[in-house]
Image (cartoon, rainbow over all chains, first blue to last red):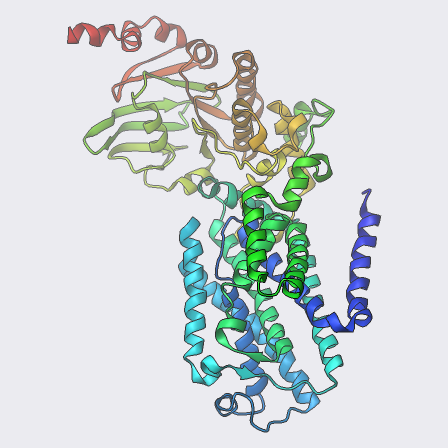
Length: 358
Length: 253
């Protein structure tokens, strides 16, 4: 394949830049980590929203479930969770380094497992819904989860809870979570790159284009929808667990279930970059994150207006997104081309003869 | 030769409207059987009954000797009995090759089958069939960018990809450029002779169906009006009346 070498260089350059950037610009570590989180949110939203045509407004549900699950495991392994949360984590507790890293590892694993489990359970309820009903159904799940967790004292209620303190220097802590956020986004990208080369992608696209036809053709559409939802939840669960620890303090509405911020951002990023493509969410997330950081820095007070303007302009004038626009402009780059040959050299007759011989 | 599809006394009503009444037809294997009749005479309803799209009110339908009138569309399609639609249903944002590949049925129910790639032979078969219907050159274009007639050809190829025993075609030439119709007739005949597919075809274009079919059933007002070889049907007084309306016209007058 031509282009595999430049692609390898591109991937390598991104990885190296990813590791080096926070060392070169230590003041921006948290901000760039946020970029990797955004890329993950966009990539996972696109599995259902872009590839399968199921627009979810409530994916942050899995993010929050992962965050709380991770916290409960991290604390619960060594202390009484109810007592800990009753003091918002402000009691004099100490996590030894061994305890901290054991708790974090098991917490993230549990976050992935529990989020996936919730996806399979809720999938039974809401994956039968189509179009706007699915969107509203998922929104309802995320909104009510935020309220429920806010009314649940065991996990800190509306007041929130602080996470165990990282056993080390603040700069080490920042770089540690930065690398984890980056590795998670890279792992999700690599996994989806592979997944989109399998039967999953074709069936997902068929469901997007004409689900009734796909059913009539005998495809097991329900299994593919469940699988897509579960993969989304798996990565979002881990991401939530990581993000909670990176922030250091979690509360239900703004951090764990941020429906109107992250919940909307992940969709906008896919729309800007081009949904239903592998790179679209990555490009969209990067652009969106940069604009967001700039407006928060230089247009404070107007930042939401600017961001809203960007959303409106992209949705009204640029629906296909950056990668979608490139596909229209340079279709041959994406393999959309007319073959010069009008028919096969060893056409149909050769094929049937071979089939009969077999 | 034993018929591959046998309908015996099939009736279907929508509310008070009788769409099919006591219809019996037989489709012999390895041949092309035609189904004609004026608009609203119940042709598509009969197709829907055969593929299990809706339950019938009375009568029996067998496929290879097995009763199928109580089966679902998915079960029937897995037996190798498929239909195409008057309106094309292709996956519009996928390219032609992907449309073909996704039509390969889920052969087994193993969980890991969802993560499999497609073997080279499937891609090759897809390209051969696209070549067969004349879409080889455009195989990497999204199917939504093809003309209506080309989308119909693609849908025909997608059905062939599933290696059906019988294909029910609902107006295959409708919307196809007249200059391409002869090519299509040739391909339908070759699908029978070279792939061993049995065809049951609804068609409004009389020269086409007379050329294509070995025997023809004619419906009118939901009932079976006539059955015979093309030349018999062509000269049948009742068929002419049904199409030209003189029979009903004189009754009404």
